[in-house]
Amino acid sequence: NAGVTQTPKFQVLKTGQSMTLQCAQDMNHNSMYWYRQDPGMGLRLIYYSASEGTTDKGEVPNGYNVSRLNKREFSLRLESAAPSQTSVYFCASSEGPTALRQYFGPGTRLTVT
Amino acid sequence: QKEVEQNSGPLSVPEGAIASLNCTYSDRVSQSFFWYRQYSGKSPELIMSIYSNGDKEDGRFTAQLNKASQYVSLLIRDSQPSDSATYLCAVDSGGSNYKLTFGKGTLLTVNP
Image 1 (cartoon, rainbow over the protein chains, first blue to last red):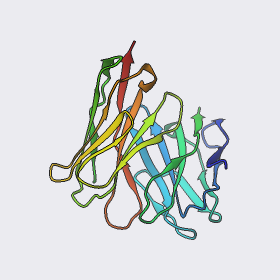
Image 2: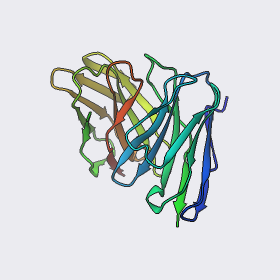
Image 3: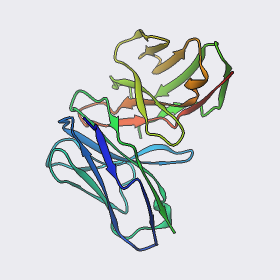
Image 4: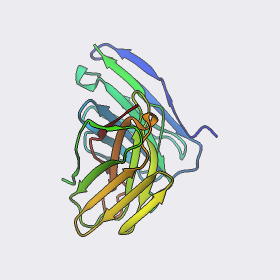
């Protein structure tokens, strides 16, 4: 039982490059989330998926897209990376809709030069 | 804009003391409250959840909730150096939109 897994763990991109961050959970959770964490800013929600087949914007969605591929997988895509997207990205999942306890993946540390 | 406020710290306590971490929130309809611990370079892990007014104890940790004052706190008794971490308060967004709003966290340092 791996919980929430994320790939890659580290990534360096040049400005304008694209990439997809992958997230998978094996807890049969309905809801999945993508956050970014920057020093002094706390965790900020980028996008979430309340259930398979639905996605919604969070607090900071600009520059990102998401896909809920199936119940297990939720990917985050940066189409044209910018230095402002340098951050640590966390994926999380919860049983939802009334069980909001979130379980976090190990994170992806992204640097955009 | 729903807000969750925490003192950023750092909060420094000696080993064996009680550490008190505080959090206020703006959304009166919030029903679920969580405390996460995050070690440097690691992901957040849940240590306490509380849903009703009053105290909830789990080992050395006690969560306290006062919905009238929109205030939630975490007490850590007999603090250990291994408790040194950032503590994040999280509050549900109310309604049925499945989201949590996180505070920016309080850095706790326990000195041997």
